[in-house]
Length: 289
Image (cartoon, rainbow, N blue to C red):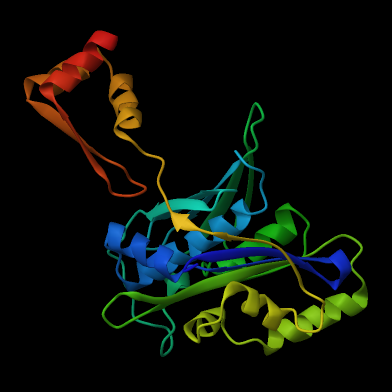
């Protein structure tokens, strides 16, 4: 699987671990949204973060990650479910800043200061939303802080996207490691030692490491047990029928004006798919009203 996500546990169930390799998925997002390098890295990290969060849900549940900073990127939205389908967009896709170090895109400055929001739709009456301030804008560090502050779960998050000089994505991957309640001090120290010794996750993916091998590296000596492996993909739920519902919500008068002009064109923010409605289709929507 070119885009792979695995869910695992380690240290006799004291550690929950997830890892993702998603080079093809992030490249599809770059191509769809025509993102420039810094925006590509920010959107790619957000999409992978949403996929990792989605893997902790049950079928039918969804999670939406929203990052709103005051940097030139504007907002970033990423949404995923337990089925491995991910979609998302960045408000200002043509954003690129000088690297802060050789090979290190300045995602933090592009995102800026602001807040991170995680909304989980668990099929209840109201979705649950947690929030925390952005501590760096690098997204992985912001998620680590979110888990500690909003969910009181000690976590390690790593997300990386390597972008070629030509703009294409050449490697993308990440992992989420969480200590579960009651984790022994020895396990905590072993995890800290391992994380400090591991190279940047994008480098690991660039070397061809699969998701399971990444976790084997991060959790060396901690008895890794893989529970699930699945494919993740960029997949939007939009359709002409759904967009027709958006048009209907505008009201009869708005539809009449569009019909008088000969038609309408709508674009999905999440995937850039364009849907055309001719005069007859608009009149049909008017009849439904």
